[in-house]
Image (cartoon, rainbow, N blue to C red):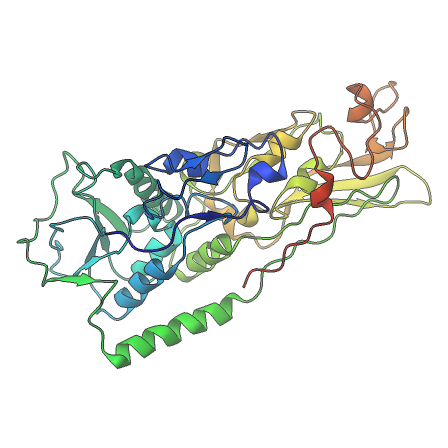
Length: 411
């Protein structure tokens, strides 16, 4: 029996609320029962169909999907109390978990293994000091076995991010794989994370470590305000770095990573490397829509009147690979690199993507990038024939009701 709460979705955090062309379907795609739909353009949950597996939670890049973290916290607490060495983690439905190949304990998670994020899986390894085997032997027979794709993706992400180390997390029991032995079927050797046998000392020690970790995480990272010197003030949508991303970055700082200069496929990690080409008109929409502030647009006045300089910068560590910057760009100037150099994840300062001169559109008062040729500079809106952009309207889909909405910091 899976434990936990039925999925809930915070529409204000959802990318599809933020931009009409976001097209995010990650929670829908991973749901093994079809309980999540996009009938209205926003995710909706059919409570009767939700089996509380939690697979949709770690795939949401903005933490809009929640299902209660109690089962995952309990699993981490139980694993912290165990001695070093390898261990096996099985799902709640597996009737016959595998014995650990290294002789370590087998722990039963009270939800589907797909509910565990890459960051939480790294936490199970005690920050890289032991091997954790994920028992996938029941997935083929499980009615919600398609959620196994989320487990595989999380493990691939860990391997890509920490490619110079021996595996921290291993998948065992997959069809066709030759790995450790099955258990004898006795449940006495399996530790139930939902009802663990834990001493008072172990329980309080685990709670203390978790509390210390929460204090160290601090408050949510807030991006700097968007600045423009001339023309209408362009309000920016609420921006914040999701708690799941902050915890992943902290976990990566704790794990010995060795050489971080490895090129890995962008599809395997929850980061992106944004590329801006010369067709960029300095409209700043990519920065305004960016949910985390990974993209920042800043102008600097060189005199009382235009032209001014502008800079578009990018910080990979806070990029959640949502693709909304490309959806918002009216010039199709935003693309993404096929590979990511993992060294960029640790860079403390943003890198400059584009710098240029900002002048006034020859057809309206909006600032736009100056051109090198004889043609007069025109903003994207005038060139596309969509009319003058105002502070509360643009044709890339900005919703006025979200401009003034501020979301409180995540603890």
